[in-house]
Length: 186
Image (cartoon, rainbow, N blue to C red; front, side, top):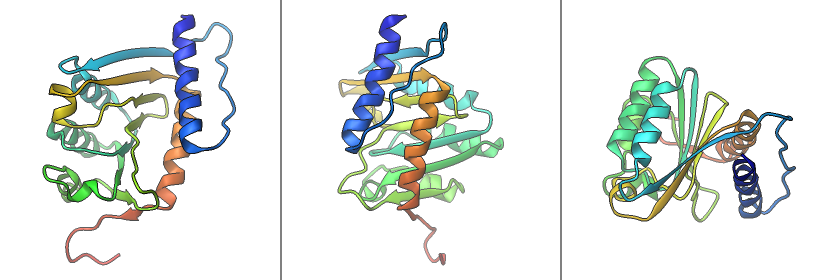
């Protein structure tokens, strides 16, 4: 239990360091510990865990993705949107045109897609589901990350942590640019 708390706090501190700002530490209520699941690749079930969480989402999924080529994860997001879940995706500006990127697939399916053009690289790999679950780690949402790379993925069930990630997602959404279908007007 203590390791789970330390791991959740470490994630928050790392986000703060990367973001270059101070973030108040989150302290779980007495007797309430965040649930954390850990996955590793290659072949450790990261994609399966992400898809399972997307399928379980009931009202919202916010995504920040650097490299995103996993058709399995993209289809789970499209399916979630089609069943009424509010799905929104932020991607690195350069990654939307990379070979095998699912950006066009998501956009064409009606998933709101934006690019974070403010930063040299929008290197986040995060999903916030139902304001209660955070998926993060080094794991890019790609076939290579599941089958070739050495990656890690955390699934953290904690509303306070999810709120902090949601705030960060919204901050990046404010300076991002909508990816529209060819010929569409803003």
